Length: 478
Image (cartoon, rainbow, N blue to C red; front, side, top):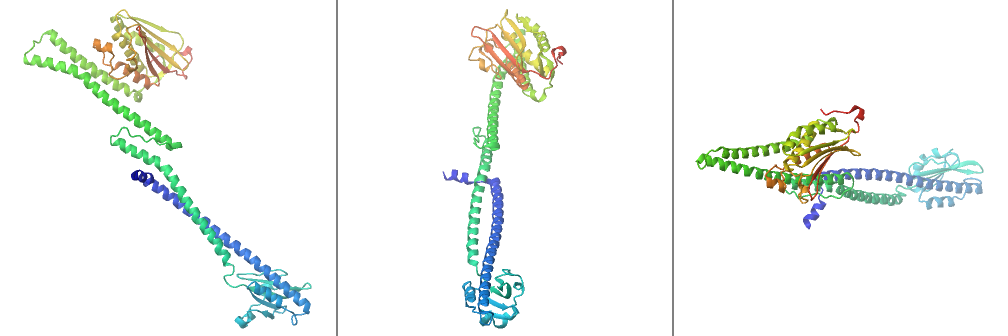
């Protein structure tokens, strides 16, 4: 259980790289957004604080102007309310008259004559409510009855308003950490979703390479990853089936070759050791065994050639009716020698296909030879060619002994021979397998039908060549 959990948490090299990339992107994005939030927050707080300071400076200047009007001048003016406003804001107040002389300075005791150089300057002459605030200060003109009679400046101590910044920065920092943690969690999840199927497919591939032909990925993932998993499993199934077919073929070939080889070896040893005379009958029997070996080897070579036909097809536009007639003509002597009657049923409608003429002729010849081999003398073989919706069909039918129902699904298997073939010791079980390979290579299919009372039909369907010309310009086989 622990090992399985560890595998689920394992990312692998690709996963680690993806997670590192996601983490760098997340960290960079969070850092950039945090910096922007801090700068924006700081500027917003500074602007708000400066506006508050300017409002306090305006109220202080208004109080000083009211005192000036009540006293008729600065000498008898009651500046207590003005000083109270400044002290309440925690600011240092400096008040000048219109000539720039200091009327009041709440920092005189600590700064001494330093305020003499702190002239109204930028605040003076800016009009009512004008501010020349820079840093931690704000200034305003003192106006009485529409005339500027002086100016005030409030200097706020360093660090005032930092509490608001600290609170804001604390929230921004906390949000940044939460966003970073969420981004890393999402990055981990996405990385796992992306790499888990790939890791599982890689493990399955290693298992297959190690000889475990039952290993399958079976990953249920969306999109291309799911398609990749299903394609890999399908490929693994094909490889397994091909391996099984290879082993079966090797076993079947060994079985097919063992009997004639054993008979041939035994006969030759008898002749060599003098246990039998080299009579013509004995030599003919040995010759038949060598011919059987030759037929098996030739059939195997033909099957191998048919299996590679897809890579070597020389396709062209054909009129299949002419090709069927030629195949029947080439095999007619063999069929008649077997005592069979041959009939053809080919209409006048065009039967255009895109195919390799030699390969289709080979497939049709195998079907006709198969009929000659298994039908009884006096039976009839009927070859029919016709057109369906999107296919051209060729049917080779006979009224011979037929194929048992339990053997019918295997008639196109390699090296498989039915009970009739085994009883009569004919055929190698390759002819129909060659037909299937050749027709499949053309994108068609071949099907066998048989009735319990006798008679067999083998139907070939090839795709119609829709690009072929009309029936007035019929195509001929190459």
